[in-house]
Amino acid sequence: KQEVTQIPAALSVPEGENLVLNCSFTDSAIYNLQWFRQDPGKGLTSLLLIQSSQREQTSGRLNASLDKSSGRSTLYIAASQPGDSATYLCAVYSSASKIIFGSGTRLSIRP
Amino acid sequence: EAQVTQNPRYLITVTGKKLTVTCSQNMNHEYMSWYRQDPGLGLRQIYYSMNVEVTDKGDVPEGYKVSRKEKRNFPLILESPSPNQTSLYFCASTPRTGLEYEQYFGPGTRLTVT
Image (cartoon, rainbow over all chains, first blue to last red; front, side, top):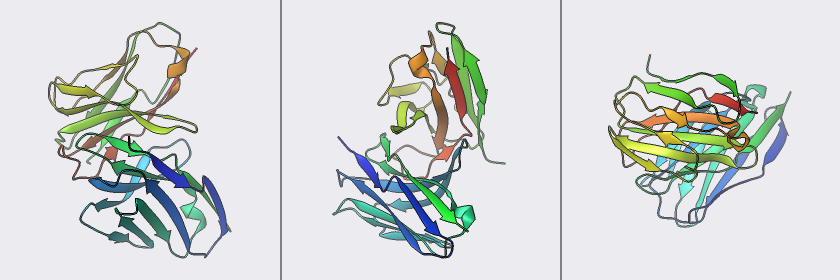
């Protein structure tokens, strides 16, 4: 059974720092991996989708990588800003119909 | 505007009183699903639908029903709600099955069952 883990559960860094969020999964037979952002009490905003044939995707200050063989994905945030404070979730598309979410990393950027 | 809508956004009800949470998407997506989000447990899939009249159980289907009579709508039905169904619920849709495409999420429905 696919399990998705995000470590750390919470992270606080000063503004301007570059940071990396981690997502690991136990079964490397995945279709895609998607990173989301969730603000408190709000819905999920898609950040990046990495298809199984890709190794990374970039959008602005965000870069997501995928290493299926090692069961890992990272989300790199450059030059962090207070507005980046949110919970970041990764979701693994484990089969034609199963999507498994990690429990998220709560990120806080200190001004 | 392309979107997934859910209603109601907030609901407080009592144990045993049947309720329906509606979900609608205007993007002609084939795949729709329901999730619940609980502290420490993340998002868990309740039910999904690959197309009209095609539905299947996710990881936590007990106590829920769904229907997919039209492509755009995917209501979640709680026949006899219980306090352990107090949660934040999300509906999501994807253009096709096979999960080659990203998911689009609704704004969420916060349900409290007393």
